[in-house]
Length: 279
Ligand SMILES: Nc1ncnc2c1ncn2[C@@H]1O[C@H](COP(=O)(O)OP(=O)(O)O)[C@@H](O)[C@H]1O
Ligand SMILES: [Mg+2]
Image 1 (cartoon, rainbow, N blue to C red):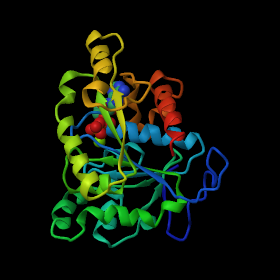
Image 2 (cartoon, helix red, strand yellow):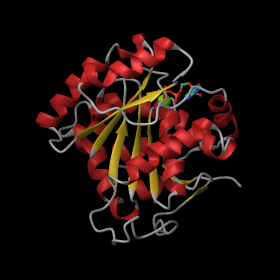
Image 3 (cartoon, rainbow, N blue to C red):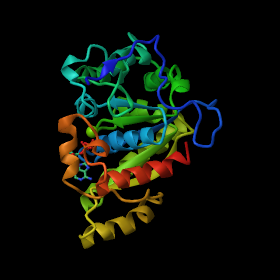
Image 4 (cartoon, helix red, strand yellow):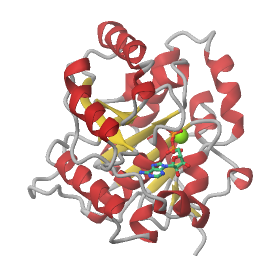
């Protein structure tokens, strides 16, 4: 079944209106940015997989693709070339989030991206309050979801600043390799600036170790050291490196659907369950 576009007069009704504790949701969605200005660290894979896992847990999930390369959009079975309205229209003010949302087979809703988003950076730059555009756009749908996951592009530009300004929490996906550390200090400096100026409520929930090869001594050493080095919590369990992840995007589903019982899928389910307690 192809993903369908939902019009704004059809609210998100799938899922539950109560959270895991049975309390009515009054505070609105918890927004979590997955950011790291390095490419290839499994931001997009983690957003798709954690989103699918939280949906399995009965959460109403919205994913936002903030990368002009539109990998999240593609990997959830939506062809970016056929998307008529996207996150670009939301950021330019010509559409509301509810107008562009697509419901995916994965059980999650998606704000898709297209290559048009590459122009958003330049378009936003001269605008006053440019860092707040996504935050105010998401306020309109906060009551319809339990969690919003933001898939950032590999840069610290204005799109990522929009994500950090809109987010309640930040998760930093990081492969367990030495060179993957480079740039994390710069990311944390940016986070500190955002906390000072744009979003004092932003919490860093921690590093998510990805592409973890448990047979490698080096990977285990990096995993043991990374939390102390940056004085950050390390989310558990680490996500194992497995070829099953490479297969999933091609069929437009996350690894939770294509390899239901794989170690990778189970690791993401465990991470999602630990996040659920904090939503
Ligand atoms: N746990 C994993 N094991 C093996 N390959 C992975 C894993 N996680 C992600 N990948 C692959 O690594 C590449 C980069 O992942 P991606 O999520 O696109 O990173 P980013 O969004 O940070 O650029 C993709 O080809 C993806 O399929
Ligand atoms: Mg990506």
